Length: 245
Image 1 (tube, rainbow, N blue to C red):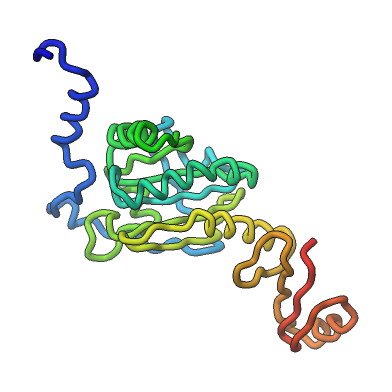
Image 2: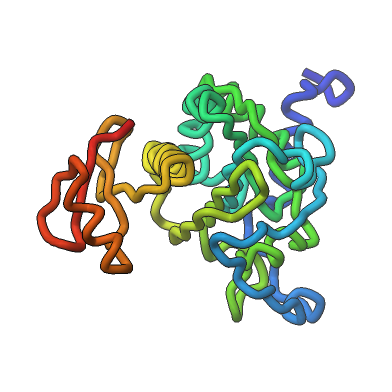
C-alpha cells in the first residue's frame, strides 16, 4: 500500500497514538493553581453543570424528572475503566427501568471519548449508549469535588454520584485508580434509595427488593408506644423490621 492510499483507520490510529490522551498531564502553573471546590453534600442540590458530551451539550437541567448516575473515570483507553464502561453499558436497560440515566466523565477530549467508544465496540462487542462529558477545563470535576488537594486532574479517584429526579444529591462513592466499581452495587443502591425515599424506611446491609426493611428508632415516648400495636419484627426498642410493600 502506497502513502497515497493509506488505510484511514491506520492514519486515525497513528494520530491517536501520537497524542497521549490517557496520560496525566504534566503540572503547569495554570493547572496547579486550580483549587478543588467544596465537596458537595448528600441531601442538598447537586452542583449545576453545562458540558459538551459525546451526545452533544448536556446540563443538569436535561435530567430533571429523572434520576442520574454521574461517574468519572481517570482516563480513556485504560483497562479498569474499560471494564466499568462495558458493565454500565450492559446494565443500561436496568437503570432505564428505574427512570435512571447514566453519564460518564473524564478530562479527556470528546475526540478521545469517541475513539475509545468505537474501540470498545470493535474490540469488546459492546456499544456504549450513554454520553461521556468532555471536561478539559475540569469545571465539572471541581464543582463535584473530584479534584483532591495536591492533584492537578481527576486521575486519583473514580467518583460516582447518584442524583434524584428533583436534582438532589443522594449518594456519592469514591474508588481508587486500581480498583473497579461494582455496577451491580450501584444499581442496588439506586433501588434502595428510591425505595427509602418513597416509603420512609431504611434498608439493611445487602438489601434487595422484596427483603424486609428497617424503621428508624423512635424519637419520642408516643412513637415508642405506637410501635407496640404494630405488626413489626422487633428485636429491641430501637430495632424494628417489617416486610417490604
